[in-house]
Each structure stands twice: as structure tokens, then as C-alpha cells.
Length: 147
Image 1 (tube, rainbow, N blue to C red):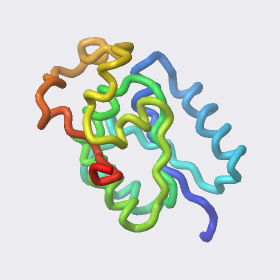
Image 2 (cartoon, rainbow, N blue to C red):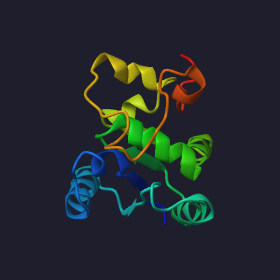
Image 3 (spheres, helix red, strand yellow):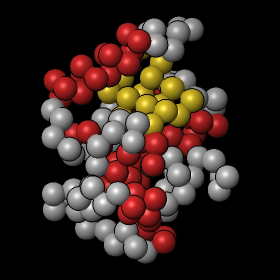
């Protein structure tokens, strides 16, 4: 259809204590407020690689919304699932990227942007092990191409 189709990425919120009911409520509030006709809550921590690609292709999002929460968990799971490439592909196809807190930081050049606040657990409660001080591992989506 011709309406707004949004890929809602809940990963960061889920790593800060939100559960699926909270995520459903948050995504519904956004959809209602902005008259979004189709919302797919797809978590790249659990939906990965070919299945993630299939679900995102089926949705054909014209909005990608990355929720607030644990910045490091969001970046790690976008990278490991192939979600970062799918975000770039959606943007090249004309999608708008919207990020809230961690979601907006992930759009930048480096995870090190989040170092200033030092609120997020860099291990996401021990679930990931990444040396975020390594510039290569800290590289993010860089949606503005360094601008």
C-alpha cells in the first residue's frame, strides 16, 4: 500500500528492561501519533540474517525507527544480524531514519559518542563482549557520511 510502513527496532529498549508488552505499547503510540499504517516490530537480536532480510523486504519500510535504551546492545545486534546493511539499504531506497536516544546515537559515526554519558552497560548485562574503544569495532552506521 501507499501508507507509511515502519520498521520499529526495539533492541535497545529490551536491554534496558522493557518487555514485549511495553515495546508493543511504545510502537503503537508512535504509529498513532504519526498516522503510520503498518508497523513491524522486528528485533535484530532474535531475527537475523536471511530471516531479517526477508521480513524487512516484505515490509518495504519507508521509516526505520530505532528505540531508546542500551546503545551498545543496539549496535552489536544490528551489526551481527546484518541489520546495519538493511538500514543502509532502506535509506538508499528513500526511507527516513528516526532514532530516540540510543537509536539516534547509532546513526552516527562511532559508539564512542555514548562514552560521555557512560549510562549504558557496555556488556549489556554480560550478554556481549566488545572492546568499544577499538575504532573499528566502535564504528556505527554513519548515516550522514561523516557530516
